[in-house]
Length: 489
Image 1 (cartoon, one colour):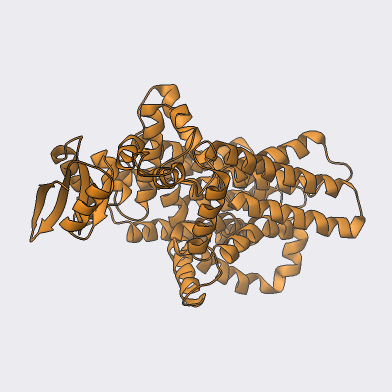
Image 2: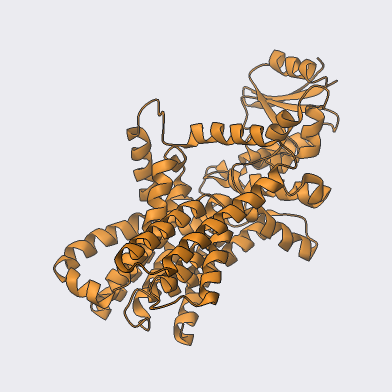
């Protein structure tokens, strides 16, 4: 990467931070900011109680309070574990920010986690630059990779999910793009693989799998590509790719299982995974796949509409020159496979999960990479003009989706105000209930309490009796006034 290209990327990144600045460190509220609150609660448990107290297992609620709600004499170990901890993803996306907060001796907080997220947006952008640079025959062209990197900085999905919103589903992008960079080099090596390169391939794949399930689909893609190459040349080196991929997945998932099995037994953990797959997977859909596919299309529109429009235009403009484009970019089919197939597998097997618009973020490498290559094939003036127009449209659409504070009609403060009211009113020995009010993690984060949603006062009292609790407090809205009522079983 030349100094000029690096300077442009860093300057553009700082500009992207300025675009997001009004949204940073405001009250956590809408558009999946429950993910950020969820992560902060998990990190707070580790920070306050100690990492090893919880065996390094993430949680979505405050565990000490939750443990009181589920006394051992009334709940089994597995019931307590499933209620208190979060097993849906491997834990690396929690480990790293926890290490940073601990190193600085600072309690987990919103702006700290967002700054951590922003830093990795820069890292991912630079890694995408290197991945796209290998698309060209010489690997020395900087126009296409620079265009791809700038597009990834200013599309609505990366602007939001590499800034305000943090969770494993989004953070996996950072290690996956590093794996793509290494894989682009590995699959184009003539002759034997350098050991260091093969080790980097395994290490980046391990980190990707240890962050989220997209890594498993990346491993499947690498195994398929290795098999395809082996069919053509029968070289034994492709067996090494398969073995390293299998080992990386096995090590990451084995380490994850070892950590989680400290608080739950294997049978219960597998049953929990089966339950989660039932609500996230593609099979046994009650209404069929079409409603979810329509939602997925909407998610792509929200996250990448400007670059999708650009790609449609480029297809029409460059259709007759496609042969020349492939000649100038011989690594393009490999890039498409490495960045496209894992996303395709993710949507194919986890279609119900794809209804969340952050699922479209995974396709950002593919969309921005291809668009960058297409733009670079245009005359420089046209390519630069289209880039500026697309990035500008991305920023404007970002503001359309995420209104600036002051234009949100008070939406951004709702969960914070409710949480702080709960923190002020609820006593430490009371279970907290809410009727007709939000119980999202944002409320819990600001309340520093677990807030249980119920439909009636009687249901709350029944909960107290079932769990052997002495008292509780119920929050509800009566007209325009928030009501607080203390209850006993």
